[in-house]
Length: 362
Image 1: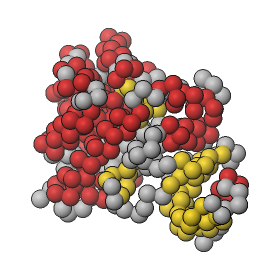
Image 2: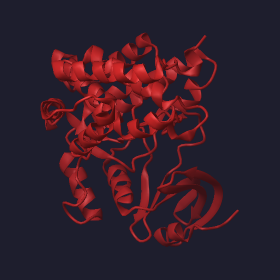
Image 3: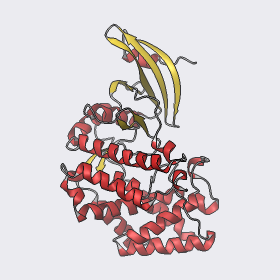
Image 4: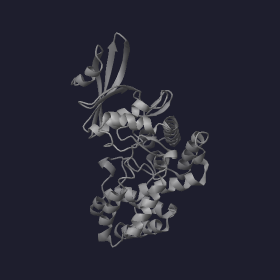
């Protein structure tokens, strides 16, 4: 095995660092398991993550720095900017939610979805009120003000422009009044009182089952944002993820209910109609403007999400999300647009249903 852990050794003087496993990562990062041992460090394994982009390093290390002890996430051990590297606690080699969804046991898959909701609620509870702390940690790692606290709302106009360009050849208009309706939905989610730290990319494979429950493990896109953005992952579902197969409605409903139950004592807002309205807004924004980036390629072909064999086809994803937005949007212009675009695409492709995750197919 190639030993490329010098950056971790530099952060842990006097500690022996030896390679154990290469765990992959992504096009943006590399993740390895290593064993450490030192005079004041009992033998244990850690995760060493290196980054191609300084902002990803800044976000992950800042997020881990502010997470209180006991949060279901890795513990920050060390971090260095040149090269960008984070050393964090090793949560083990357990399975994840994606494993359960793509398995054959519906009860295990259902339990995994509930565990995901529990973990998201735990992170939200643990970080409520830590906005300034997260801002300070980000500024300590990046040029102050260059790493925005949140990016999801800031990207809305870019996504609206992409949607407009893709819809033109279909004869479906994206007028400025529709853009304003999308912006109004996003503005609902600008309330800092109902915002927390989010891992942002809380996909079914970005977690690990431990002896004490599910823990979230990928914070390289961490940001401060309204809680509804994360909870909407259960409704869309999984808008930024490769294994975004459909969830049974009753499973998604119960998972959202678990989230509410976990949060209600601390944040009564989650038990109000206002949260329902905001959850619908986040769901619709994920489903329509934030899914527009893959509309052009889907018009030309029907690739799988992320090119993975266990991923749904893009056309099924788009049609499902548009129909969902048509049904639940409280903004009449958005609902009408989603229905019009859905009809135009069905006219080209026919109906392409989105299947349930494999474990729920019976």
